[in-house]
Image (cartoon, rainbow, N blue to C red; front, top):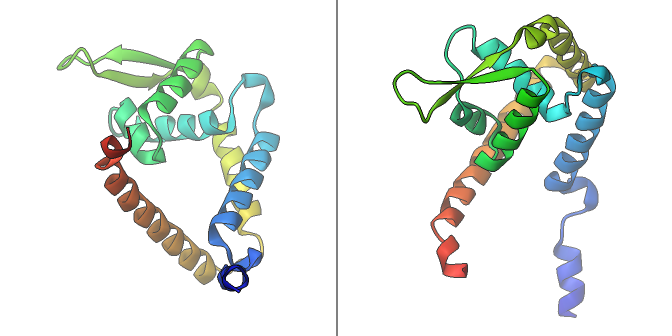
Length: 167
């Protein structure tokens, strides 16, 4: 009887937010890949990171930590992304004058020449994503997703403090 209650108490597939977010995430990656300029060698994540670097570097210096925070990914993930982007000629890393350990990330001429295409691709995918959704529903969705992200970030912070207990 307990097993039956557990199954009945679990959320229905269409009500499982994590599952739906995961599905949308995969669909979004495939759609971005479809619209991305395939000959340039950018992955979906590199496309997003390059867009961030291009937009942000106009106003402020961009460092690896900024990308880690913006995309909520680990240092090793960002290092790998940046190494590939540097290898493919989209960015250069320049040592900071104040702290040689800090590397400023700068777009190259190659990145600047495809900037419009990168931004157009992102805009196109955003339009596809928002099709048939009212502005109010879209804003509500963003607000809820941001809150979910904050909730999980708090949980990650809590878990970081407890990692050594499980090692």
